[in-house]
Image (spheres, rainbow, N blue to C red):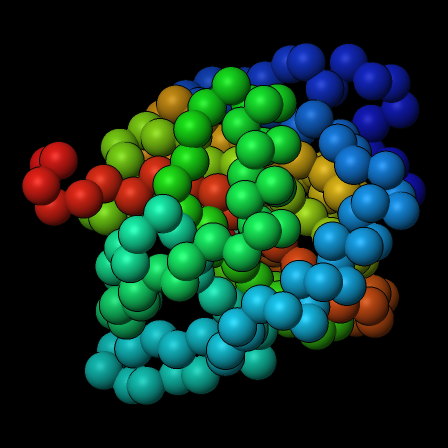
Length: 206
Ligand SMILES: O=C(O)CCC(=O)C(=O)O
């Protein structure tokens, strides 16, 4: 089911206040998106994600990878990762995201969800390594999944479906005022890959 029946959502801010989220719909043909999906599945250095929560070491079923312009360090869930050099496909996808969103990115966090039962809990991407109020461009491949935002104070919720080959951007004060999540579901069996292009701030630029 598509959440929006007309196309107007593509040019408007989906958040009612305190941030900006634009959904561009599919920016790749189904065939292009499927070819990228297969190559990302095979050639990315996927690893189970690690986290330290309340002092306990946890390994997720979801797999992740981290690429960038330099060997940037990025810390979240109390684990520090070092970026791998861009692959040809990731550089092409970064260019596509930059062209549509009018922003520049220097790194990409990739997530591989093996089925609908894997998701991501409520969080915001406000880590100190990220540019403050920097844009984050999200590209999705594979199974269509629901993606939701919740305002930190009012608790208002906004949800959308992220299609195969689609692009969404979060910018402005979105990460300060809103959390987002990828809810798990028993109704979706296929895998999904998500790429979030981000801007890491080097220690020397702080
Ligand atoms: O897989 C998704 O669409 C969500 C990814 C996400 O929330 C994140 O990378 O911060």
